Image (cartoon, rainbow, N blue to C red; front, side, top):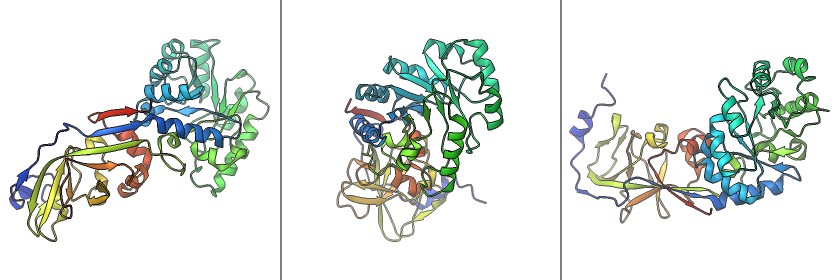
Length: 367
């Protein structure tokens, strides 16, 4: 079986470039509009119906920078933030000194110094975490996360029943919806009933809704909503403004004859004499391999298809129908948002956003 990573077969069938172009940009450019993040937060705040609107900035602000995002949202009025693990909290605390910062993973082994030093609030997920928290940080604030049916994180009903009497004074009681992106899924109402039953009478503020739950209606919003993906321009918040644009420089343009193959495995072959642009980005930069031969790039208002597999550092696109090949093609922008690109790659917008790599030059506006 031929090694799909071998260069020999591809080099044998691919003619040398007719002409090479040297791009001015050394890397792709990722434009991040924090003004759009702020406007998306305001829109979700209006939709919250009186509940406090927090913000999820885990995974380094969904890949866009937790510090800049938190700083912008704190200036907008956000007072409660959520991170995945305690080590993410330092950047958020520095950006929002007066905010509450909750940690979804709770109090894990070794977290005490970070929780204390940065004033983070762990969301307790298990009896073990509760014991650890009491012993390591007596009197330190905590929240409670209960499992209402997602089966992923949080105190299970039996553990919560045993501990509820001693876990008084929680700063927040929360759970997470498994199917909020599908409004008609009966799991949403089942989890709502379970959450009410498990938290009624606690005396703590309650939170069940992330972006999707916020859109499900008033019954799901309780005291605090905690949007994530909707802040960054992704579904299911259809009213979100796009937050990112990504352009990738053209390294080289070559002519290939009819029948010539392009890229690893030669999964794309020219059906006519064609022009192929090679671009300086690949799956090491978050443009995942599955989008090869499926996704499109944009030259202004004109779409050009990817031709062949995505490599670690390179893309190839069929630019035959362009009158002129620009110095860069757009991956994300007004014609193709994160969800459209994700659909072409068989994934979700979350993965596209959080995978955008560190080699891009970042241009932040709207601070």
